[in-house]
Image (cartoon, rainbow, N blue to C red; front, side, top):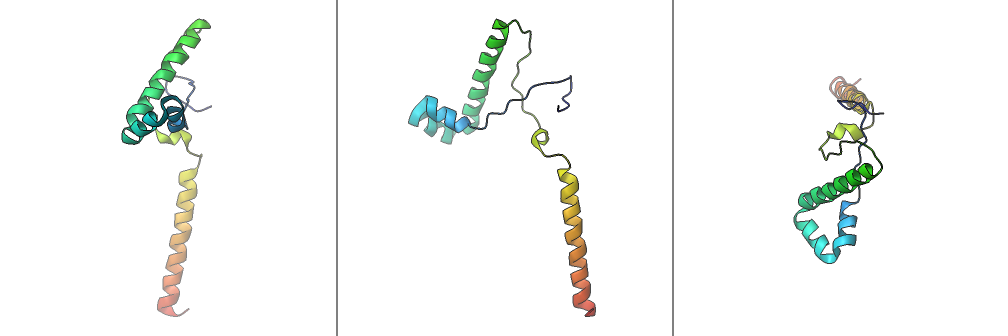
Length: 106
């Protein structure tokens, strides 16, 4: 479970916004998406929020359903920074050894 300030939360990230817009808006929707992708993406999320909130109310769930921009770090693989640092360090050491060999001939 990801730690989110304020307690547990469910995060839903739509990965096929352009496909949904093409299915629901046809060629016109696809064209508008190409011109203003963020506007239509926001619209998709607003509609999802409304439908989710209504569905939860019908089931008797008292929930706070919001659309929020979350930091991209939530979707990152743990220890990515450590692995990147280790790789950069290894490359740096390798480069220094190569320079030493070129300069000293050993």
